[in-house]
Length: 288
Image 1 (cartoon, rainbow, N blue to C red):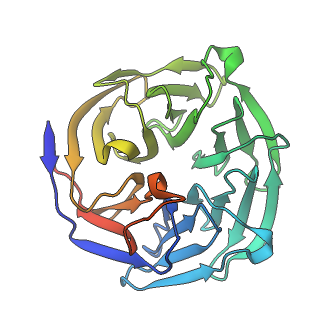
Image 2 (tube, rainbow, N blue to C red):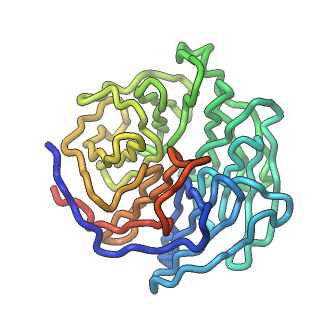
């Protein structure tokens, strides 16, 4: 099941304390965007390979960025991590359109997925609520009471990465501390556990979806798990585990054409001595 892979490209993020957490790809341009968990810098990784700072640390009061995603109309959404906020920006200049607040502390606004109508669905790893954002008004509301739906909520990082299922009618989110996966119906807001063959997957972090393939960044294990997922997200099966010398506590994965972009977060080195430079590694998309 384990498969060793090599990086086909490595994109260097400038800075000595970047600690990137997530990545989002603009399907129209092919540009990718990553953010710093520790200071809020947002980087652009152009399809040409050039890396630049899109928005500097502290811009508009932004001090941390966890999940980064591009919505169906090309806006950049940046989860504010421990700040409890979510920012929405107009590209290409990163003009702030809205700053939303979950209204609770402690908080760790972590990741975003979009429904087919552009609605944003937002996880908070500390708050047992799934939030929903209207794509037109950019107003946030509490949507699903996760504990009320039977999701256990121990200490530590809970819900993290989130994706839209292939049928477009459900969401699947991973629970980092327990390694469990949960499916949420968009129509009914009902929650059920995903039957994950090859799970639980503790340290599951960022998720990506490509057709019926679910990609799972498993940070502390330096792995990317590749799973088949049912159209409705009710079941999934790990098919292979990707390992590489190019991985360094991978916190997120994204699909860009025929490559996977792997964020080397090195979050285990915060407060210590990270290996420089910080990077995003590209590997070939695994075959069937």
